[in-house]
Image 1 (cartoon, rainbow, N blue to C red):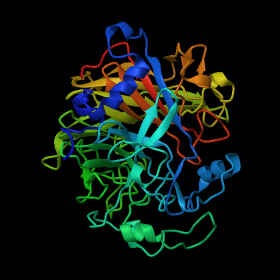
Image 2: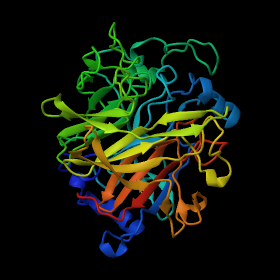
Image 3: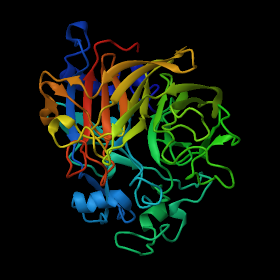
Image 4: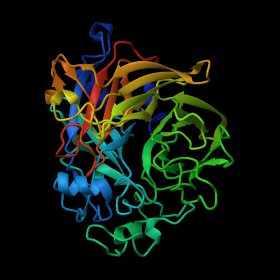
Length: 485
C-alpha cells in the first residue's frame, strides 16, 4: 500500500516522510526551517546538477529530429544523431515525492520538441536524489529510493498502454514509425520491437509536461497534444481512456479544448495552439482534486494574456464546471533585425500550497545571462532571459476584471547567493536561473521551494553556454515569507 496521501509536492506539505531524507537534505542546505535562518530576500540555498549528456539504455532515438533543433544539436553542439541504443534523460518538466518518501520523482519532457520528431522517444519518470553537498544529482531506486551507482532500469518507470486503454492509435500499434527519418535521411524505419511488445508510449503519442500522484497512489499525467489527462498505476501502465478538457469558458463553438495535434480532433476546429496544454498541473493536499492550467491562450479567446485554470475531481472522474482565469504578463524585446517585438509570457508550472493557494512559474522566452557577455540583452532572435518569476495566487482573490490576483514570491533572475553556491552562475553575489524552460517547482518546507529546468535536449537554446545544451539544474530557493502550508 502507498503511504498516506502521496501528492505532487510533500504529503500534506509536511515533512513526515519515510526516512526523512528530504528533510535532512533541506535542513543541510538551508539550515532548518526557523525564523532565525529566514533570509531578508529570496536566496539560493542549494544547487545540484545532472549532466546534459546522461542516458539510459533503450531503443535508438533522435532519428526524426528536424529544423532548428537538428541544426543546434549537430552543427552547433557537435552531436552525432541518432542516439544508437539509448535514450537521453533530457531535462525535466515535473516533480513528485517518491512513494518511499526519501527521493524525488522527476518526469522528463515528451521527447524532441514535437509529435513528428519524437516517435522514438520513450516517456520516463526517474527517481533522483539531489546531493546538495556535492552538487550532483544521484540516481535512486524507483521503489525503495536507495541510492544507485547510475541510472538503469531500477531507477525509472516507462509509460505504457498494454491493455490499450487510450482511444486512439499509438506508435506501438504500427509496423513502422510515422514519417521518414532524418538521421539517417529518408528512411522508413520499423518500430523498435521493445516499443511494440510492451506497447510503450512515446513522444509521438503524448506530450507529457506535468504529473501528480493522487491519494490512491495512481499517477496522472498532463498532456499537451490533447490536451488530455492520462491516468496510470504506479508502474506507468495506463488505467483508463484519456480525459479531454471541456471548453469551460465556452470560447467558440467547440465544446472541448483541442490542439491541432489532438488525435481525436476529427472534423472539429482546433482552438488551442500546439504546445499550449498542461505544462502546469498540481493536486490538492488531500490528493483528490487536480488543477490544470493552459500554457497558452485559446485561439478563440479575445484576451491573449488569459490562461484558464480548470479543476478535475478524481473521485467523480470529471472536471468541475467552475474555472479560473490567470493573466500572464507581457514584455518587449528587440530582435536581430532591430524590430521591437511584443511578447506574451507563459506559465510553466504550478504547485499547491494549500486548498486555495498556489505557486505559479511565469517566464519569458529568453535564455542566458546578459551579465556574462555571451548573451545579448537586445538585437538577437532569442535575447537573454529577463523574466523568470514565481508568483502566489489565491482562488479566493480575484481582481475587478475577473483575474486571479498575483503576488511575486521570487525573481529567479535575482536570487541572493552570499555563500556562492551557484559557482560561475553567481556574479557579485547574485545568482540567476536564465534557462529557456523553467518548468517545475515544488515545496520542500514553508520557507523553501525546489525548481528544475527542462534542457530541450539535444537542440535547445542553452542558458549557461552557447555551445552545449543545459544541464538539469536543481535549485533550492529560501523564501523570506513563509508559505501557509
